Length: 375
Image (cartoon, rainbow, N blue to C red):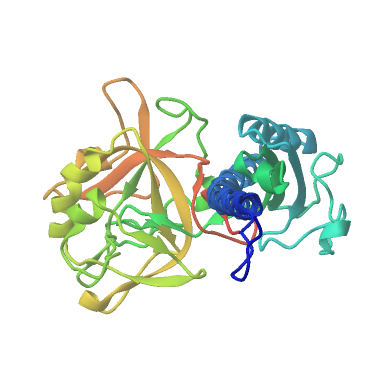
């Protein structure tokens, strides 16, 4: 029987095939979207891990250079080993490093600033004479998961870091000031031992070497060798327990004093609670003599590391704990300046390496050394 008029019957199999194709394309698009989200998140996490690993490797290399600045014999092989061990621990699949100056500029073997491609490579056998930093490039390859659906089976994350070392120019300081050379507390013009005569002690508990007594004298009208680091007067004990982080832009730098011996008395217990720890102490130049009474300022020229034994404050201007004496253990404690001190701090000058802002210049006898990540 023939149909007359009307429309031809629809091909249902063709319609079903079209729907199936659209569904498959939709599923692929959805998986691709999921892949982008998952792999994007994974790539970000991997990038952060590689950046942290490069930072750590650069710091490790700069730490070896810091020891070299401090007088310990260290070679290019030592720098390469420290970086290599660190890179391995952080699972870097690729790593390379070269030497820089204190500002992070690439150096060749002679110490000249050059393009990165011409820099002296760590592991190349030579540390440039003025090397104070390490530039590290680390990478890690990682497999994808959903990314395989859209043709990506592996990605690589790469990161760069620069760490430098040098004279420490900032940190969390004890709010006192030590002198390069001091007029004794009896104000008779006698000078104490200068900085060049301060013997550095070797590491130990306590350090191995001479223990010094540093007097906190009255060096001008109303001014004792106590610093106001946070801009709030007469809170010396709080400045010890919660030291503000200070960075000196350059040396020399003027820092105001916190006035009167009452401030020294208030901080004794807080300082003595730090016994057996290394503290950072600003050092002022020459005799540290100030003027201006309540507006006194000290000319800070460097930062020292001091392994703390005790602080003493007394109404007696000839405080026995602030004079040269033999302690109960039979050890001699020597003042770096004469008699007449009622307040003092005792301990050992040490070569101490810590993290913090650093500056250029040679490492002096009492300088603390810092390692700073700058990139």
